[in-house]
Length: 88
Image 1 (cartoon, rainbow, N blue to C red):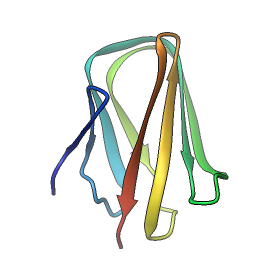
Image 2: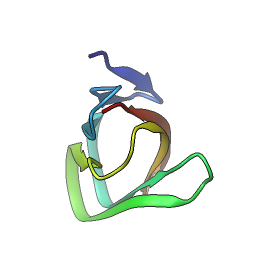
Image 3: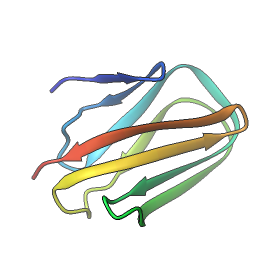
Image 4: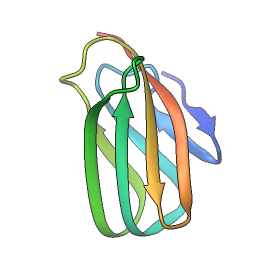
């Protein structure tokens, strides 16, 4: 598996079977929300993190079907967007 550099952060592994990590070069402080969207733009997975000081976010989207998905990690310092491929 390879990693993809998106706006200074990484998705690993990508493609994935459902579980993956968002890795950042520095810790994300404050509250954070991850939303995963399908090709139609509907939110199909969401998680909120409070008072984070994390540089790695674990995402278990194994309930999602194979396909291309988009995500947004919303933080106090801005939004980080990218795409992930789920391949089962």
